[in-house]
Image 1 (tube, chains in turn brown, green):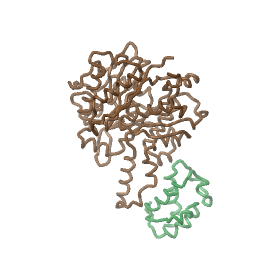
Image 2 (cartoon, one colour):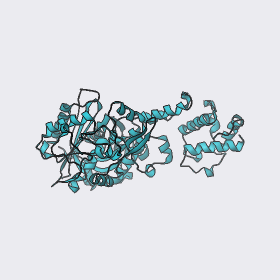
Image 3 (cartoon, one colour):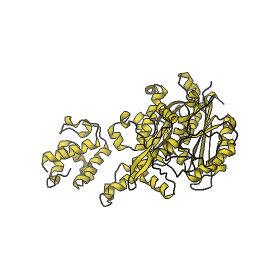
Image 4 (cartoon, chains in turn brown, cyan):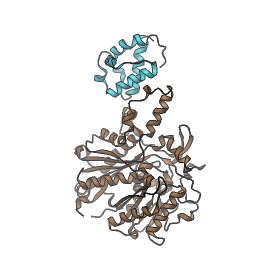
Length: 412
Length: 87
C-alpha cells in the first residue's frame, strides 16, 4: 500500500447522551454510566430516549440555530470539536480541499412533523408552511450546515445508509482521501431522530420500542429480558487525513483505518441476515490482511431487539467461533441507538482502549439470552487486556445494509 | 394599533428572527439590511410573521415597503390600525 493510502484519525468531535467529549464519554463507558432518560415527545407523552446536552451556542449564533436543524447543530458541534481536537491550523487549511461526509439514518422527518403541527394551528392552510422547510429537509442539510459554519468549499453530502450510516460516512471520507478528491475529510454520522415522534411510534408499532421503569436499564442488548430499542440522538465526526500529511504536521493519531467492508443482505426490509453480516466481517478482515483472532475488541451493533441481537450473534459466532480471544462488547446498552451516529460513536468509545487497555463492557446484562451466547462477551464491568491493538466495529441497518470498520493502533 | 404599537410589533418580529442583533440602536430611516444581518429568507420570515400574528398579507410587489423601519410603519400602519394588539 502506498503511504498516502494509509488513512488515519487525527481529531474527534462527539456528542453522545452520556458525554460531550471523548474523555467524558470514555469515562462514563468505563464507569457504566447510562445516558438514557425520560423524554417528552409529541402525541406519545413520555418515552425513553438518549438525549444530548452539548452547548449549541459554542459554535453557532442563535439565528443559525433558528434557521437550521438539530442535526445541523450536532454536525457543527462535532465538526468544530474534531478540528479543534486535531490541533491543525484550520484558518490556513485550503477549504476547497476539505470534504464533509456525514452519515444519516434519516433526515427531514423532524422538520416535516414540525411544519404539519404548525399549520394544524391554521386549519392546515399551507400558506403558513415555512419557507425554511426545503433547506431544512434536504438530505445534505447537516453536512451543508457544517460548510456554512466553517467556510468549507469542498464537497459535502449525506450518506444515507440507515443505522450503518456512521461507519459509511467514515468509509466515504477514507475513500475520497485515497482518490485524492480532498486533503482533509470531516467524516462520521449524526442523528436528530428523537425530535420526531414518528420513530418512537413506528418502533412501538413494530413491538420494538424499549420500555423499563428505570430508563438507565432500558437498553439491554443480549439480555433475556430485552424488549427493544431506545431511540437516541448524537453525533461523531473525525478529521481523517493521509498518514504522511498527519505525520508531517506532527498530529496526534488515534488510529489507522486498516479494514472496511459494506454489503447488502438482499433478504428483508428490517430483519437482518447473519450470513451476509458474517461475509461483511470477513471481507473487512481480508482487506486488512487479518484473521479473527487478530481482533482485540469487537464492538457489536446489537440494538436490543429480540431478533436482531440473535441474528448478529449467529454472524459473530460464525466468524469468531466460541473459543477465540476477541473481547466483544456493545455501546448501545449505555446510550440507546444513536441511529446515523451509532457506528461512528460506538467505534470511538473504544478507541481509547489503545491507550488504557480496557474493553468497556456491555451493561444491563443480567441474564444472557441463550441464543445470544458469545465467547468473551465483556459484561457489566470493564476488562483489562494485556494490550489492545486492533478494534472492529459492526454497524448494520434496515434493508440489510451492513458495514464493518477495523482500526489499528498507530504504528509507523 | 397606534403607530408606536405597529413599530413595536415589527421590532418584536425582527428580534425573534434575528436574535443575535442589538435592536436598541436601530435607525428607522436606514435600510434594515444595512444595519442587521438579514437576508431574503429573513424578509420572508417577516412576511410570514405578519400573516401569523395579524392575518395580514403582504403581496410580493409590496415587499420593498419593508426595507426600513420607517417605510414598514408607513406601509403597515393603515393596514393594522384597526387591529387589536395581539402580539
